[in-house]
View 1 (cartoon, rainbow, N blue to C red):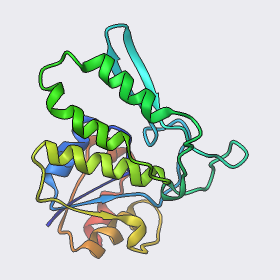
View 2 (cartoon, one colour; view 1 turned 180 degrees about the vertical axis):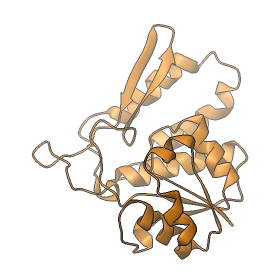
View 3 (spheres, rainbow, N blue to C red; view 1 turned 30 degrees about the vertical axis):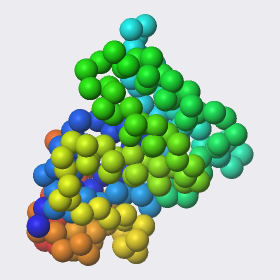
View 4 (cartoon, rainbow, N blue to C red; view 1 turned 45 degrees about the horizontal axis):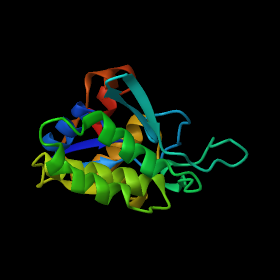
Amino acid sequence: MNCAILQPSYIPWRGYFHQIQKADVFVFLDDVQYDKRSWRNRNRIKTANGAIWLTVPVHARGCMTEGIPIHQIRIDHSRPWARKHRAALHHGYSKAPYYGRYEPLLEELYSRTDDLLADFDIALTVALAGELGIVDTRYVRSSSLGVRGAKTERLARILTEVGATHYITGPSARNYLDEEMLHRE
């Protein structure tokens, strides 16, 4: 059984969905430390006036999120971020082919009032994967598994926990992955 493991991201890139498509089980690595200014809560879109950032505002204790896992990061709904993101997507893409087909989905997603960033990111990702025809992949949150350990050891334990026989990852993983440890586990 093939398994991919990635942190939840806001509007994931194309390769993220390719990994989901290749996996029988996809694990959202949501119980690792949240990194401020990461892809967890922001992304860029192209517009006629150039690229713009879309950022989901989050609550930070004393402006610090150090040590807080992704699945505990709360969205700051005191700002009208969802309305602004929807408007930016509409202005940037309303004339694109098939925009009308996806507009109701965008409206539904940006009408959500999730308290937690991971809940919103995961719902967005699963919905987009479904629109791409990825319907057979099983989704799991690492926070639901209770697996501990650091780096490759933790990944190996997650793979064992979900019954995976093969790990799907991108080429940049070679920079931090201990492949020998994965083969031993």
